[in-house]
Amino acid sequence: MQKTIILNAHVISPGVDMEGASVVVENGRITKVTRAKVAAKASANVTVVDVKGQYVMPGFIDVHTHGALTCDFCDADPKAIFEIAKAKLQEGVTTFLPTTLTVSHEELVVAAKNAKNYVNEGSPYAKVPAIHLEGPFINVKCCGAQNPRFVRKPSVKELKDIAKVFPVKLISYAPETEGGAKFARDCIKAGIVPSCGHTGAKMKDLMPAYRNGLRHMTHFCNQMTPLHHREIGMVGAGFLIEDLNTEVICDKIHLCPDMLRLVFTRRNLAHVQIITDSLRCSHCRDGYEFSMGGLGVKLENGEARLVEGGNLAGSTLWMGNGLKNVHEVTGIPLKDLVRTTSWNQAVELGWGDELGKIEKGYRADLVVINPKSWKPSAVFVDGEQRI
Ligand SMILES: [Zn+2]
Image 1 (cartoon, rainbow, N blue to C red):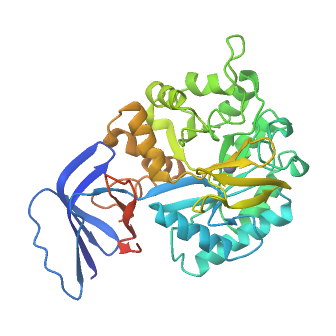
Image 2 (image 1 turned 135 degrees about the horizontal axis):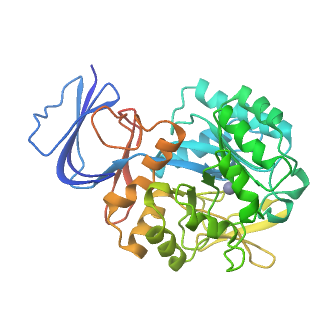
Image 3 (image 1 turned 30 degrees about the vertical axis):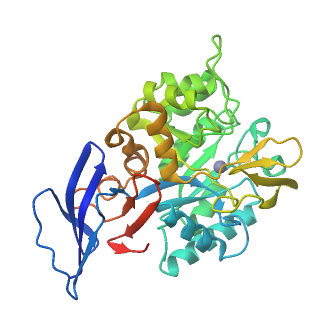
């Protein structure tokens, strides 16, 4: 039996802030979290790791990320997902949903095949249980960085054809499109979470899909109808309807610090999920240039902006930095905020009894974070130290 003992841990888990703790891991699962003294003697079957008071948190779950290290999940290259998974692991992400762009059906199938190949090769970095389709059934007027050429009407057949290749867990679509309300129900029947995103929906457009089970919002506030006092739009809906699970890009750029405060202090934290929505430029150095839909993008001061006009072109956020940003602008204790980096995602996606907590019986997906630099110094996946 393989055993790992993590000593001097500052455990931060939903509802828990425990300093001087020991975490015992056996065969990939947490078997004990305690402040009591634990006999820790290294041997062939026992690994002892002293984390010297650093934070130990549940491994992050990023449900919305496109790329990193110059690679995009929609690149035809099967190596891309390996590079992305390696970068995500460095951020402390132990599980993620690689996210597609609005591209052709053939390209989506290739992306799904590449995810399958990554799993067949033993998922050597962060785990990929399923993928997130961002589009192609969105509102052509709310494309953002998505290519309008490939936008099409909701099709359950197309969705199922992709899911046959590799599981799809989340799909971002515009509920106001033709058949949008029924599509929500069809997704749920197929075990896929429908999400309102890249949308020009009004409240009257959202409600039929909500009644059919839609409970998720893609990058809340970005590429959706703003709040107005005569039509509260999707931003208003996110504040009015408590059980909508809202993704939030917490880089202080996509949402300004005051908006982050508004979201995290006014919404029920059980229904907020930090995402990165990172693009291929994340984990790259300033000066990196790439093309997105034929438009030149340059990375400067960690911000990816169009060369022409300077519009924001995507995120370079790391998951832990999103948590740090929200903690700093709101002052909300980490033990309350930490549910927004993995536990909420796990509950919604059906892994709530396995992932997102540092508790006996849970999988030992753990990130050790230096509280000064907020950089992950160690990452465990199923009890195995991979960083
Ligand atoms: Zn995205």
